[in-house]
Amino acid sequence: MNYDFSEKEQAFFAVVDECVTGFAEKAGPQYRDREAAAKALRQALQQLASSGYTQIGCGAGDVGTQTLVAAMETVAAAAPSLFLGVEMSCRMFGRLLETWARTPVLKDDVLAQIREGRAVGAVALSEAAMNTENQPLETSGTRDGQQVVVNGMKSFVVNGPLADWIAVAGQFEEKAALFIIAGNTPGLTLGERLVTSGYEGAAICGLTLEACRIPETQVIAGLDSREMLSRLRLWENQIMMGASLGALKAAFETARDFAKTHKTGGKPAIAYQAVAFKLSEMMTLYQTAQLFAYRAAWTYDTQPKEAESLTWCAKVFCTEASEKVASYALQILSGEGFLAGNPAEKAYRNAKLGQICGTSTEIARVKIGDQALGFK
Image 1 (cartoon, one colour):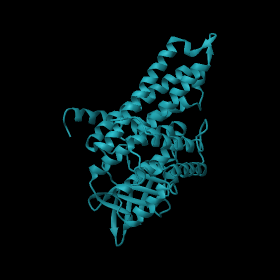
Image 2 (cartoon, rainbow, N blue to C red):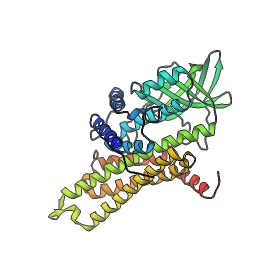
Image 3 (tube, rainbow, N blue to C red):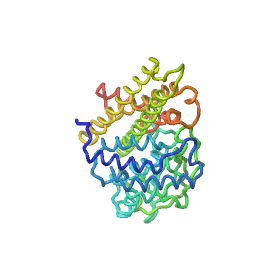
Image 4 (tube, helix red, strand yellow):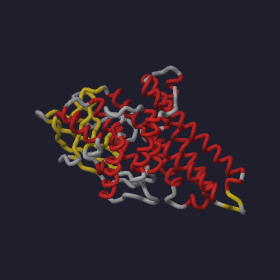
């Protein structure tokens, strides 16, 4: 394992960083308005597409997952809500098309739109609960000539209110399937945009499908349910690792800079040993999380069979570390940390999603224990 980045990779990071400055979120609640949220996300996708960022994992681009995770950290630190929208479109929706789609309309047309940042994708996976490990998929499709009629309900769909295309997980002819549904399809009803405690700029909603008709060419059928859900959760876990690294970076740097410049008792806050100790522990957690995430990403590319369990471990550590580091940052910022809008405060509110999205921290620990004991 070599975690050093080449000159080419460093150049890629610089381009991504330059793109991020064009759409980084401002302080305070953002993009509550649907049109403003859609405009911001599309701008982010188009700018990142110019760097090649949106193509990684979607059948294009020549950088590995470790490089992707490092680039994710930059985007997530500067614009966490937009990061979530971008990743759900590219790394979830785009990846599933690249992995399983076979028809020209999906493989050539829709996937090209996602790679080039010309369309917004979403994945509707969760139903009654956010997890799918112990909750069977009840959404289903039935054949009607050359069309498939889809019925069901989904919850917590990131990008749902803005999406041009939504991949809906369900059952078709007694096998797992993904129904690729255009956002304006009759029978598709989007719920109210959810008000969340973190990632307040992200557009999230539930949806209902009532006799929603789509061409059979937009159905990815015959999938193994366990393999499909496992793969989708693995990608979600990678996204939340990237989000956590971004939160760690934002919280640590905000606290560090404040401690160096803010004076109390006639001297900089960093001069107090208690503050220095907190920053020391924050840096230790941040760098350990980075290395853990890089190792999980490297394993995904080089030893796929080992990637799932290592990703569970890395996600648990990264998401919990981000909450702890953000909490320490608020303590160092003192009264300013209690004010809404600063990066550390946003990181603290955002941190909880990483622990419940994808494979939740509790379920991940059970799976890690099973792996340690040799259970499958």
